[in-house]
Amino acid sequence: MDAKDSNKDFTFSIEGRDYTISEKNDTSKNNTIKNSKKQTLHVPSLTIGAIISGICIAIVIFGIGELSVSSMPLVEKQLAEEQVEPVQITMDTFFKNGSPILGNPNADITVIEFGDYQCHFCNVHFQNTEHKIFDEYVMTGKVNVIFKDYTIVGQDSVGAAHAAHCASEQGKFWEYHDVLFTNWSGENNGWASNENILKFADEIGLNMDAFVECNVDKRYEQKIAASNGDAQKLGISGTPAFYIISSNSQQVQTLSGAQPYEVFERVFNSMLEN
Image (tube, rainbow, N blue to C red; front, side, top):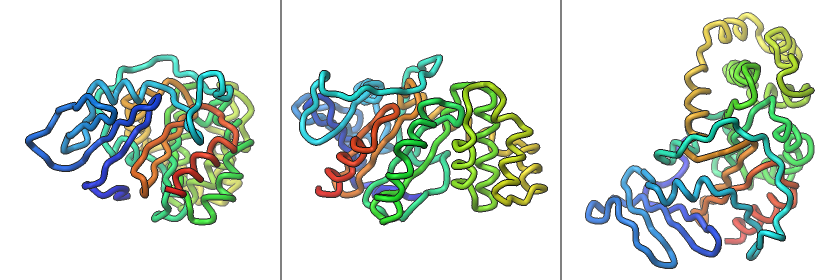
């Protein structure tokens, strides 16, 4: 997916200060940072240095107007066992190594979710929030969604992620994504075993020979590893983690954990108004 025009900027707003990632090819200003109320980083390939790395480590909850720490809702998330210092962020960090797009490819807003199929709080998001987002914003053409793997819970997480990509070969990634979370029953307790991975595939009518061959070949191992690497570059410390990107305002806003639907609604409506 060619997600953004190379001449457009992306702006992060952190604690009242704006940071803009500029993709313009200005060789005289490469790798320079202007210290002002709005900080702009000029790098041709969207390579981001230590300041934006620090920004991505921060967990920021965006809503309408200013939010104080005391007013922020309780955030629940699955913690990663290790945190890896971010190195470099490009637009590929957001848009490559993920699922097929769900929704209108030309929607005004794209949501990138980093998740783990065994993650408790990812399942909370699926059960309590995701369906309403899909009904109100995705199916109406306002928002599209990409799911990216961050397999932090256990080996069955990798197996489930790989199976979803194999289902994608038959045009059923999102159906398999749904059947995995629908059958969620805990972490590292066997519900996402190889036997059940096959059972779920049969439930949604996949060609089993092709599905088995895909999994035996392990053809998506590198893609999953690359998606994990993208999450680590962004400094994500747990799942689910969301990056909400507006094609209108060129802003990227982050949400972390199993947030209620109303939090997403405020961010979406604010972006659609701008």
